[in-house]
Length: 287
Image 1 (cartoon, rainbow, N blue to C red):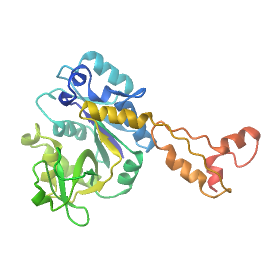
Image 2 (cartoon, rainbow, N blue to C red; image 1 turned 120 degrees about the vertical axis):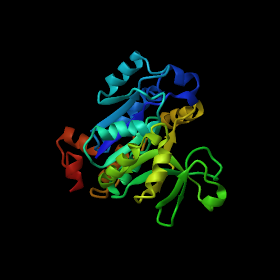
Image 3 (tube, rainbow, N blue to C red; image 1 turned 180 degrees about the vertical axis):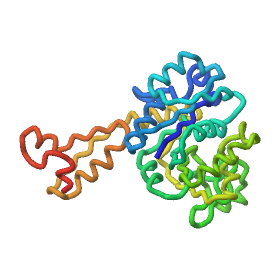
């Protein structure tokens, strides 16, 4: 499994923030969005991460590109990011890798590691969707059948077409390796160079089955208020104390909790190790 982060945008919807730095360098707590994304991918066991960055625009200074390279040096530059969209950035990234299962995320999305793990374990090509309160929202709307297979994906779907469905595409997708060739075929068409990936997905659903996975645990940081929402979420501190007999499942629960960003686990096995008691590790405790 590989990951691709599409971060070549101009950040125009962020106002003054977008003029100064790319959205992937915006900070939440003591980390940039890019650092948080990479940390989450690595916690999920994805270590080969391709980052697509921009070249044109006020925010894409040499200084900012250098900052990004210090965080992650496996990057591709979209030299025409001011004339193209994230479809062309994805094309550049897919052209640089061998076919494999690929997790693709926009550079302004933060999501739960559990979402990544769930989507990774699914053999289908998936996009992440977010349930909304009503069908009147900005963004790509999704119409699917009863099994979640996408029938239409567009910003222009009316409530009459949606038939009560209220799901928004969130800029996250997991592409099965057997479908990579179909993505490449559509992305190679010149007509999609300056189009949002929603147009590409809407074309691909005519050829291959693409399903949506609904989950609320993601934040798309397109505007300043969404950045503040993310900061509030990541500023919350939780302390969870678990007690019970050995082999009751505490270690299993702790492992699941540990994939959450900025989470540190103080496991009793570490204390037992210091005292010379047994079991002395999470692996021994699982047995």
